Length: 151
Image 1 (tube, rainbow, N blue to C red):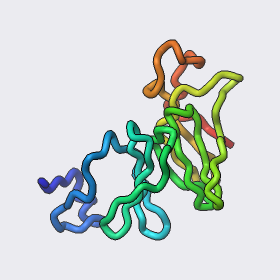
Image 2 (cartoon, helix red, strand yellow; image 1 turned 90 degrees about the vertical axis):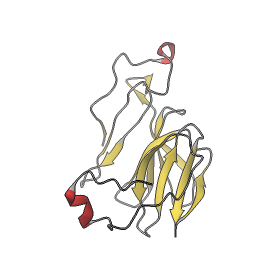
Image 3 (cartoon, rainbow, N blue to C red; image 1 turned 180 degrees about the vertical axis):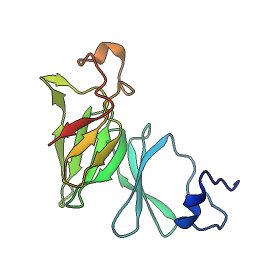
Image 4 (tube, rainbow, N blue to C red; image 1 turned 30 degrees about the vertical axis):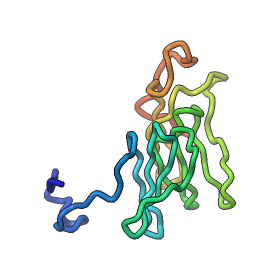
């Protein structure tokens, strides 16, 4: 695999060693996020999986994932996911159950939540483009971008 460097600052946080492929055969991956224990989680959108990488090995963390895309953690360390298929933002509770945090705006279903971030005060911001739905499925006439806020 070729060595790719986009920014000199990257060398301050990523070793200069050659990069290696740790997984293949994935669909379209997005939403990488580091967990507090050093594991990496990422979404495989078309295969509706969240994968976990630990010690150089890839496993399945959650399947199905609702075709999750963007992932992050809230201030309590709970995984948040933007789910295209379910048209929602979800939170994974400590017992593994999922709670829907956002599914509608003004009584209309979200389009296709995509990217997500949590501000230092706990507010959750996410984008809602129409990527994961057909035009006739849209209920909101706008895309909810650049960011929609959950309080």
